[in-house]
Image (tube, rainbow, N blue to C red):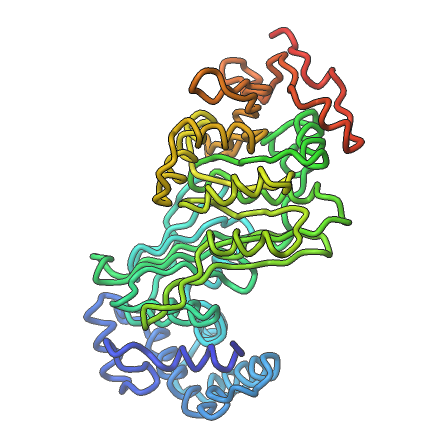
Length: 456
């Protein structure tokens, strides 16, 4: 969607409240005073008046779908400067700058949270209603000193975000997953299921994806474990990244995917495109939700099946959370070695149970033993990532799936995070993976010293 169209969506507000540019200033001012947001702030009144005049002067341009984004931005800023200069209300320089910034963010960006999205120290933005905005900085939550004007203002921003990726959110479809142009993931929930007003959650993506060196610097993993994981990916081991919400699963999947050789064809499948792979030979696919007519659903499972017909060397699924697990396991078992995916679980053993449950969700009446056989033969490695109490993300387990013992999938921990030692960190258990010889087939060798347990 062009920038002009996005601004058009800004002017076309939901029926719950009239558009700001069509509301008399006196009515708008009274609404803000009633909401407790006016409080005698002359700058707020001037901002509302200038925003209305901007829409009056640039109306045709704002609705033009052919206007280049750069040209439109330049015209908005130039017109804003002219409107400010003609304003009769005395304004300090700082107030003028504030008005220009707030109006520009609202017309061209994401309103009050635009400054938070630009802040590199903010990793997540959480809007709990129009006047409660929280952020995550360095793994810790804190209240942000910004707020939306009202519920209608928040809904306009949500509608704009959703329209960019062809999604919609309303009373009939009150939940939506979307993304920003930079890949940041967005979830929105609106009434009637959001009881205290619309909620918006933005999980930001770094402009430059994190590298292995970054994760080593953050102590998420060690140099030895990084070398081992690279060997596993190059040696075409099937890897599952397990973890809770916000634990860093997608970041770890990006790191693992960076180890895939450039001469292999990669097919990625996601609910909302988040992966940032740098290879050249990539086909990216994204699921599609049901439309307003109750049709058009394309699930992850459909995309996994289709990927098998696309001659992939690797299949990378952003996350499996339903019966797509069965198709993913079958892909891993039918010649697509080296596939990668993530799932929600609190420990490697829980990840096995989650895969069993997701396979059963498909309605296939398979014996549990058969499902576990599939898992044991398909998955080679489970990487457990966790978010600790101090907000840091760490790999806590790297576990090998070694096969079946009776009716149980057998695991052995190769690396464990040491919570007891003062230094902590991810340390080898002394066990060597059983697939070491299989890595040699692909010309990959792993020094035995990587798995040598060091005395505490």
